[in-house]
Length: 518
Image (cartoon, rainbow, N blue to C red; front, side, top):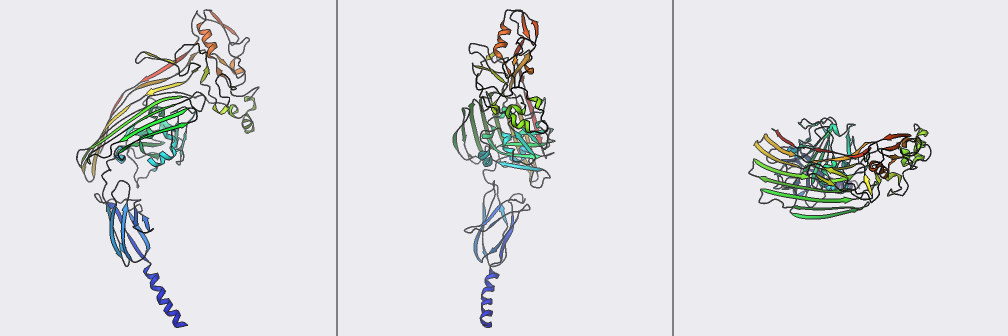
């Protein structure tokens, strides 16, 4: 029995010994020698493999003896394979060459954080955007990123905002293809100017905190880099339509040439979006366009041209509400909520006069108006034209419109293996603005009693929430009478004089810039 055990031990032991072979090595860039962290290394025809670590090394354990093809792959590089005979531990170093499609200046354009840069960052891929973003504003894709909060605010198209590490958009640098997009007056970012850009975006990197970007941008909170990539797209076209609640319809058309003669590539996208909105009267009427081109003069010089814009109009919902408007019972249960904030009736308008009757969808920035009223929404001084209201049955107090085209020409020059010069010349112009009120505006409480009612009633004496009374406003403005009742007093005015108006503020801008980095 002992002899049998010894023989069995000798038979089994070589099997274990032979199964302990290891295939290891490094994965690097063939031209620079830099490590390629995250590269996938597999033994073809098996389920064995490993990912390269931050220094480019990999190790595959428990490889049985035999002949194998070891293949390494990573995005942007051509796959590389080597055939080896494994009879013990084997070292296989793999050097990958940049693939023909690697014309993208993704790292240079946006000054992205690298693997060893001491910056907290998150990358969002094109595939992730297509799966999660849908037709939302671009910041919403970052809502699951640590230290980032994004909200669509009132629900108007393009009215989103983003906070990074507690800082609002004025302290977050936003760039598109290397060009800063924060407003030059107040630092804000108006996402409605870039409605539809998500359809052309190839990737986004969100750097949190002071970043690696070497531009004079307000990046205390962080930096958001939006990159479009015309050269990484395969040849072909795509037409897509999206439908949703609120009469939402979005049609997108995209065409890419693919790489032509290993020299150039073109990509173009056109998007049309319309809808009446989920929140009351937050309608949208928008176009967006994108064009990108890349041309490699030689191995050391490359030019890229981009043009992008999104002309749009949309209704807004900017007024905040007392929580009791949305849910009185919930509001009363809150420890610090003052019950006096809800006296008498307290509810959004019922399902009359075009209001939805749903408190959560309530929007104070509009009110019904007699369809016989022929007044326009606003007068646009550039082009001297008047613009019709979106709907003859109501009037938006707050409407936003803008077209901010961006054109930039990029040049990349490789001086030597360790030095590269990138230059970006850009122009950003356009005009637009928004509507609001000015003067004495007739307002009524939720019981329908307004400032012009008899007695000393003021709209905020009554139950909330209040709404505008456009019909009464129009009647007073157009009246030939020289007096009118206002909050318990008799006021005087000239015949036909308006006591309150819908004002229109317009911003026209043009910016030329040049950014160079060595």
